[in-house]
Image 1 (spheres, helix red, strand yellow):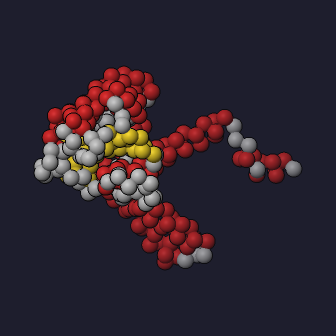
Image 2 (cartoon, helix red, strand yellow):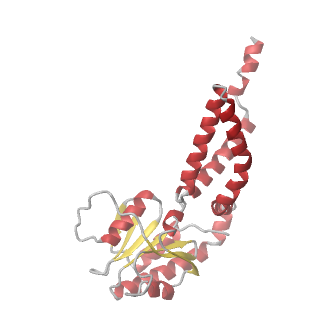
Image 3 (cartoon, helix red, strand yellow):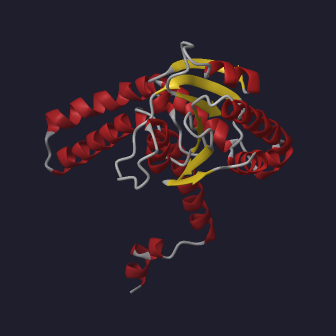
Length: 258
């Protein structure tokens, strides 16, 4: 009886085991959030498949396949560090964030929100179409590749200049990460669901499409009506005022430290 209890003792973990499980789960969750918006998630699935094949080869005693995969894992770890370097850096940066840090950066978020809201006001008055995607927890790396990379601090004059008609970058979306414009002219996925309001154009469909696939805030200025709309989690809210824009951007943006 005692021997049986010793064999199944691991089924009754103590508080230390539970703490370790919780820490590992949080780390993996944060890493998956970073990878979710990038092509690296496909490579991760491929790696998981190789690990599965390796265990099958061990069970079936397929020595040649087992040895080949062991060599691959031995040198592949170094290659993975190179391939996943941007994602790993981003993941470590996110893990380094704390609630206390976010409290100290709240003022900065409000300043960024004010700059974005001011730019949207100016674009609305000029009836200039625009679409701005603000990255949150789910990375938008996959969509950055479709546009022109940038590294510029968010400012109202810069945003209005980007969307000036006939400028090189006015077509497509601006992507904002923290307080930085990281891409312009990005192509976003269109919604796959039918839209009852036929007056909504491609920008609104792209905003809804991205909000369905990620947790990004997507802001749109209509050329026809000059109204400012917000797409979030597959829902579209139209006719936002300046104060509403500042509040929703500041309260839902995330801080990025690099």
